[in-house]
Image (cartoon, rainbow, N blue to C red; front, side):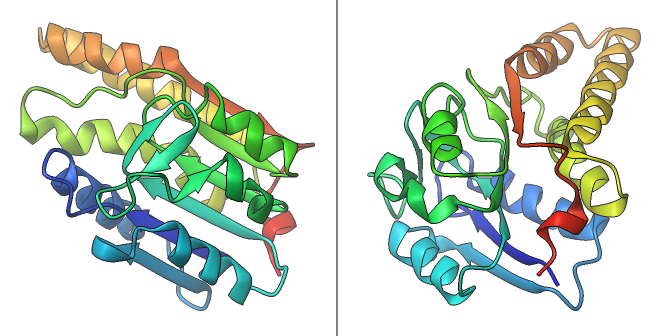
Length: 210
């Protein structure tokens, strides 16, 4: 059984709809029935709730998927401007996989999590751009979610899954260019170029099962 926490800051005035769509897209692509799945959204996007739910796993391995704003050293939300994940609570993330579309968190937070024993991390070290046309949101989201979707739907390693993710980005980039959607293509390429990950020894879904 997998332990999975989704943090989706759907109350954010700027990116709330994107966070909600990211979560609904993911759950439509991966069958998590029979696993221990928690959704923290709205006012529940806080460090207190994150820590409480991790504690409830009793030391078991888990995956945390985060859709919110981020900064160099924290993932932040409208309910917790100080960060629901930060250096001060990174010790909760030993034996975990953290997967996020938050801006900038790969600059410092990634290393805090890895230092605490985090088995895998996928995120970004720069702004994660949204398309100017909201109708293209789902195409950007499909790229952002594709790595973990592949990871959970196959037996492939996290490293291999990120390579699939990069290919998804490149294919969508080429599609935008082919449609002469140059701004969308440029934004998507920037997101791809800021993608970064850590895989602690060929991490697979099986390793994260409890």
